[in-house]
Structures are given as C-alpha cells and as structure tokens.
Length: 165
Image (spheres, helix red, strand yellow):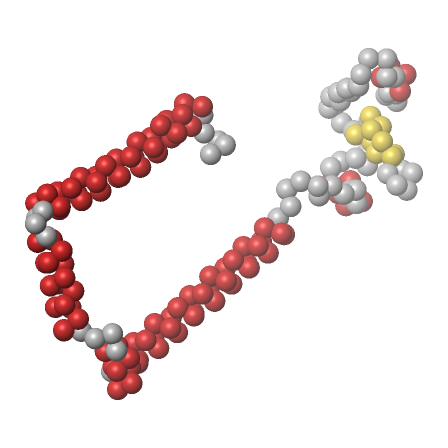
C-alpha cells in the first residue's frame, strides 16, 4: 500500500469499514426477515426437517463404503496424482524463479576492465587524452576528435592535474 497516494489511502480507510458494516447490516436484515416471516418457529422446523431428510437419504459412511467396493477409487487416485504432480510443478517453478533471481544482479557487479574491453572501448590509441592507467602501468588514451569533461569540486586540482599532450 506504500505506492498509493494519500487520497487513495484515505478512500480505502473509509471504504473498508463501510463495506464491512454493509455486510453486517445485510446479515442482520436477513436474520430479522427469517425470524419475522416465520416467527412462530416454522424456520427451525423446516430446517430440522431438511436435516432429517438428508440424514435419511445419505449416510456419513457411504463414501467409505463406496471406496471399499472400488467404485470411486480410480477418480480419487487420479485426483491425488494430479494434485501431487501440480505441487511438484509449482515447487519446481518456484525454485527456478529463485535461481533466476539469484543470477540476475542489478547492483554491485562492478569489476575491472580486461584488455579486450579496454581495446573495445578505444582506450589504446597512441594520440589523445590520457584518462588513466591500467594495472600494468600502461596509459589509457582516449583518442579522436571527441570532447572530454572534467568534473571535480572547487580547488581540487582540475587545472594542474589534467594534462592534454
């Protein structure tokens, strides 16, 4: 929620309690309607009759009897195998995403340039502006008709430290 504006955060803080109160008020209205419509106990009688009807037609042991007879064993096994397969696929995707995230480094990957990269960037000319030295003591020379900008704080030696041969 940190990327939301102040107005959006305020709207959410106002909207959520209104929705919660609305759901609560709706449930209270439904309860009142049920009790007032059949206030003399008909709701509970009908509910009890429905429960007795379900209990007379169905048994809690019916699924276990069906499994014991082998009626629904194949669909259950297919469901379990599919579930296990999907869990493994999800786990593999999660591990793969973590590995890909580890390999991709955005910050902190600084390293010294090698000779091939120095040559590729054109810093081995014979004439031009000397911009530094490599670790072997060779000068890095920026040649051609290019501009170079020097930036440093006041009185830090820009005038005496920069030499253009």
